[in-house]
Image (cartoon, rainbow, N blue to C red; front, side):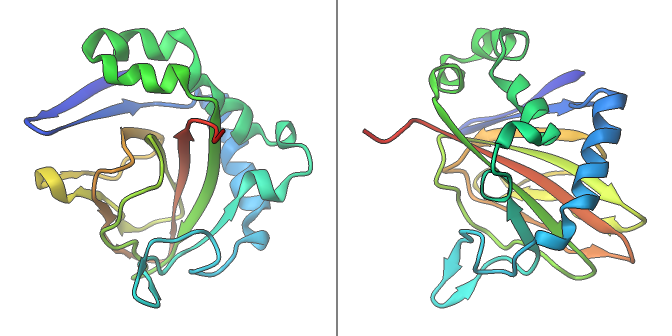
Length: 193
């Protein structure tokens, strides 16, 4: 895992390259392919809206809704690593804001699929923090993430995780080609009382 920070005056982004081990990555990609048939169209996955229109043109599936027992999902199991000290100690040493992740009690995982010319326009998430892991199936270009608040683009890279506050305005650039850009979005929150 390679950890780097994008530090801007009003927003820090954390970039974790090689988020999954090679073995985990193979398992995750197999699961992403096997659950593809369960994806839902835009507007059915809690998408950000602009009036009556979804900001997303890709499809997605919530893992906690798909699996009767979420522990059956290797994606769910592997993504829990973000809550471990191995990942959080260095983040918290940089900013106490990351203690929110350590103290959070709820997460939701959405697997998104984007094909040729599909995007997710500018939006914010209803989460304290969001972790997005980028994956690709087949060949394509584009699929980068753009953070409007700091006018910064994070290039698509296979097995790259990006951690940011859910309130940060972000979007994806369209992909071009026959492949599929996959994002595993983990929304981290506190439980409602």
